[in-house]
Length: 453
Image (tube, rainbow, N blue to C red; front, side, top):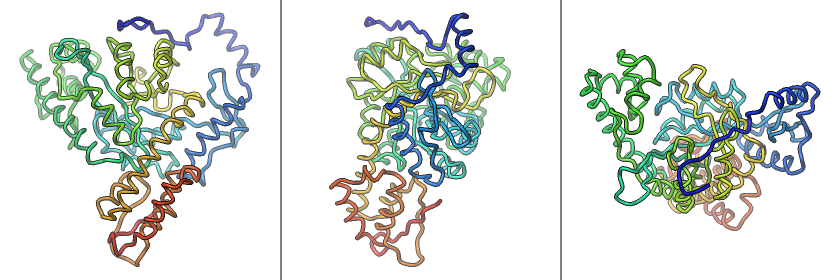
């Protein structure tokens, strides 16, 4: 590949008619399934160990009771067999999705998803509801966010700028510096309000009497309006027939009603993700005009991975691009709950077990370090604020009063095993933190921890 933006996209799931017939014949004879390799067995064990940390009673089937298909995706064998289905890209009503976080979780459960990353645009607001709902179904939630940014190929060249979205994935208890990330995202959301207002004004100049109140009503209370909310208002007002037409005619990048927000430079967002204990992944690179140059720059900035898998398979060109720059290769449905046959369903992207292993192999040390920093802050200053950072996204709740408890010891005994494996906790740093935590009581912090099962 050269320095230009052209990437020839081929999908490895596309086959000739002859190949399809041969595959179908092999499937009927059971020829497309084979026992896991030793590498896949170890990968499957590594993944399931992490998945079942906070749901030990619903541990997944053993790797030996599974087989894998030609793409390395695990399939169940027998009634006790199971597969580990990750959904790493989804949206709720907290940004531009159509369903509440709890409804997204419910639908994920219906589709067999075991691990769900809720990645709303520029907000983590839906994570607590998703975590609470997920408890009922034994689903593990990865707190995530899709951050809106701008890529500029050279300083001052605003004409060549293009929007780039970066997915951030965090540990079970979230970012290590939550307030800092929250402010960063809040600034982006403030820009989204101005951007959406400008879009409405441009549409008004195009003789469409669209009301700002209409857009805000669709977005919902506290949700920063985006292009999709403007498009939905256009459909409801009868100015376009459907969402696709709204984007194709008016709202596409550079379109007559398009407007820029106040998004940060993409390098700044990646640095923020890294500084707050997250894993950064380039979202839908196939939507970029100049993916090669962008990926090269983002790798230098600290990018961890990029999406290369879609519901219809792996995109070979982007997989090769990820290999070139030694990036993780993942994917997700980008589910919004719009309905219709054009949208990929939750859990429709079957990530191979070795891909999941590679993702967690990179993510778990980063998350482990973030958890360590959060616990250190609380051990040094056992305040309500620092405890809230620990319990914000976890299966723990804080309440005041009641009988005296050793809050720090509760965290050690009941919370740490939900977040970390015994191996991850067996080091001098964690032993020192646990010693400090064991001396933290309600008399210091004025709080107690309730573990929700």
